[in-house]
Length: 278
Image 1: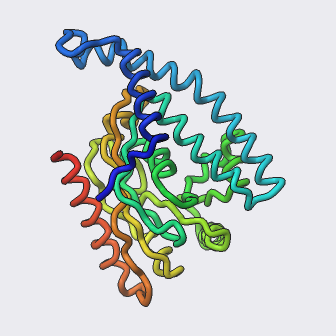
Image 2 (image 1 turned 90 degrees about the vertical axis):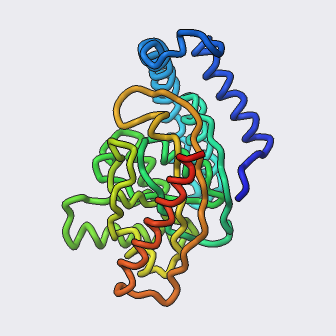
């Protein structure tokens, strides 16, 4: 298993650590390292910086991809902007991302990842060596700029209480993503965990993988729950995104669905346990 140690990654890690250290203004052994003081002083400051910088920056990124997609929906500038967007969020939340493993960037996948934080999306975007799009709840499409950008770049809308029409719309979005060479990212737990523990996987992502005969690629995220748990306060820290071995679906049918869910869940659970033990 390899870990991303590219010069750019190293520079981002150093800068993020510098931001982290500057905000802490702490040295080893200082009583200010207590969890209470950290949460009273550091977390509010980091949260303020994150929101003050990244909310307007996100609007600018959205405007950029909307314009780029209007001119040419296949332009590589969109992928550049998505990567930059993700890395900016990681930087300003003082999150240091380490990427382990890799995948064949010439293939398409259904990327399956555990979900403990908003930062998981940023970590997956930054870690994946290929273009990815994801399934998003319909409510986010109503947010100005964000929803417009989602439609422009092909993010797939999911109606939680939708019927046959909603499923047809989702399947059409999946097909468009596949035709454009995009892999699909799904969080099969359905929502972010509130405890940090891995939740049961739902079957939708795996049905998509089988129906489209796309391999399932597990990416296990570790550290994001501590860096930004479900809630308001940003805490920062080190996050690992480990890209696992792809699980083939060629020749599988819906009768194999439960086995595919189980195999992928076990792969993510085992990797998560190993990372937690390091």
